[in-house]
Each structure stands twice: as structure tokens, then as C-alpha cells.
Length: 83
Image (tube, rainbow, N blue to C red; front, side, top):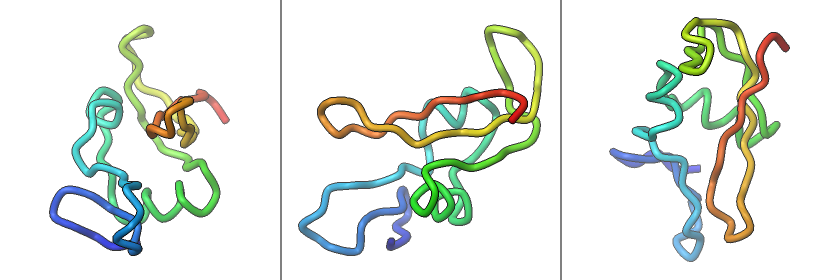
């Protein structure tokens, strides 16, 4: 993993994978993609975070964020509360 101004990306230039520092999902839950979060997601596919905002419930709670991929390989995130 290499840190760029806008992302954490694969160190292999042939690889197009990146975790964007500014992304809608993390902004929506009131969090930032930091180097430690990116490393944890890449190592274990999940990261525990405190005080994540849920728009649906209109409240903050602790949650686990999981790194997933859609059928095209695009990064997606999902949250499970209270884990």
C-alpha cells in the first residue's frame, strides 16, 4: 500500500485498486479514511469504529465497517452496529 494525496493505493502500478481518503460512505458516517483504517481494512476486511453516524436511525453508535466488492470489483462498505 502506498499513500497518495487522495488515496491509499496498491504499490503495484498495474493494479487499479485504491481506497479513497475522501469517500461518500465514510463522510456519511462522520469518519475519515486514515492510514490505520486503510491498513486494517486491507489486512482483515473490517475495522471497529466508535461513534459512527446512522442517517436511518439518526444517532451515533459503535460499529464494525466491512470492506466488500461488487461484481465489477468496485470497493463497497457495509456496517454492522454493536459488534
